[in-house]
Image 1 (cartoon, rainbow, N blue to C red):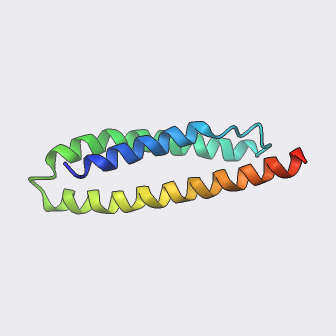
Image 2 (cartoon, rainbow, N blue to C red):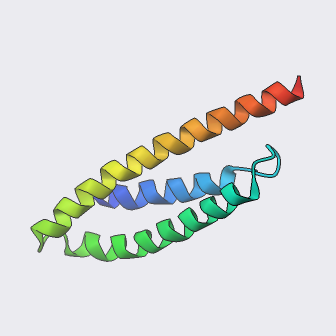
Length: 96
């Protein structure tokens, strides 16, 4: 049950990807394509994650995998937060 938190965290990360207005800050098209690919991968992981959460009580390997995924999700969230902060700085720099 505690690892249902991982699903919520993944949903939050996906929502944050939608937040970024890449055109507004003038980022390269290749970065936008990379973020779209990341979003697709995260969506796939989320589907597998739902199944894994149901099976974690039967498998130590799945429980271990969920723990690693949870840490990775935290790391991803940190990277997206840093990206958002940098993007905001760029916007503020060009607005002044």
